[in-house]
Structure formats: C-alpha cells, structure tokens
Length: 112
Image (cartoon, rainbow, N blue to C red; front, side):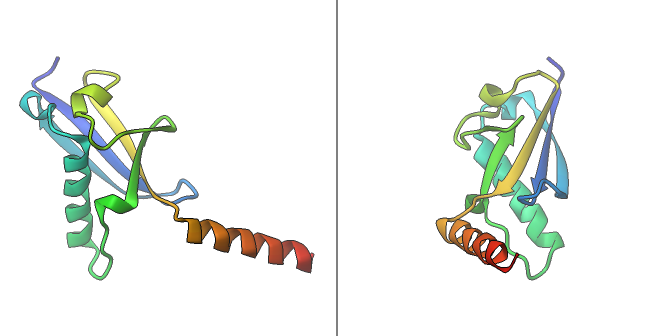
C-alpha cells in the first residue's frame, strides 16, 4: 500500500450532475477514521467556497458504484482498491421532496 491514499469526494445533484469534487490525500494512519469525518471535512470546504449555501454532512448519503455506504465505517473498510477511493455524495431525499415530485408528475400527466 502507498504511503498516502487518494480519497475523492464528489457532490452530485439528484440528476447525477457533479456540483463539486474534493481530492483528499489520506495517510495510512488516517484510514481508521470514519468516512463521516471526511464528509464533514468536505462540507466545511464546500461552505467556505459557497457563501450563503450551508451544506451539512447529515444531508448527504455516500455511494460507491451505486452502493450506499455507512458513514460510520472506517475508510479502510470501505476501500475496494488500495490506492484510490472515489465516493459520490448525493442529497438525501426527504419524504416531502418525494411527495412534491409525485404531485408535479401527476399535474404534468393531467395537463398532457
């Protein structure tokens, strides 16, 4: 294993469009920390660069290859290869958002 591991966190909207990416170089000693800590670091970085937009780690769900990740797992556990970890972050959909989308689709279908 290399001395450092590349951890790439990519924020995507629900349509899959990348909004921001952050490449973190983690030392082997940091691989025992939970993924959540890296997500929180990403949020702090995002918030510093996007005044007025507050991003909270609890709003995000992490994925690798469409597989949901537990943010409390260590980086070492979620790694599939030993030199690069590419994690997608997506906003968690609330039941209110799903209801609103369903209403919009229903209204759209009725007007067509």
